Image (cartoon, rainbow, N blue to C red; front, side):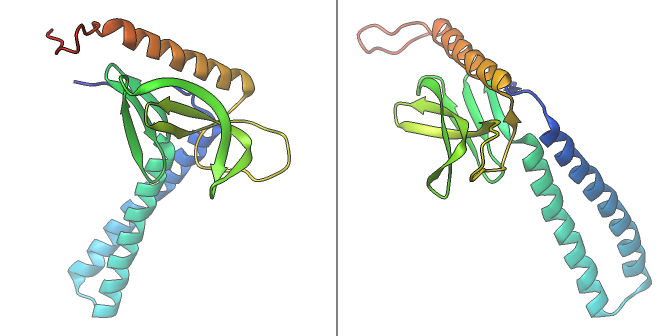
Length: 180
């Protein structure tokens, strides 16, 4: 079984998203108990639709808060996983060529913060992890924002994980299949 390990450290962003999860879960429980009791007693159609709509809204809230809480960079023996708020991309170590700090993109334009980019044979992919910047300008608030020292440690650790992954794969000879 694969175990994905988060590479970027936890910061205040995860505390805020944890609060969103806690408030949403508490409200969802209250809504389920009171809504269930109201539906069991028999209510009109408008009230029932309102209760169902509120439950659907809480489902969206909890899903968004959970995705926001888990946004980051994860690694395992098979590759690196980039978990954003709205999508997750998994890249095998065989496709990864390196890691770099480049400006984060917002609507296709660079921002003042650097993001960690995964360089692959097919191009580069931006991670949600960014380096803190005190400059004024456009920022993207979609994931962990690390101090300069933590960001540099993240890049170093990712490079070390890539080196370890390449060492553990036996080299292929003559383009043949590797048997283990």
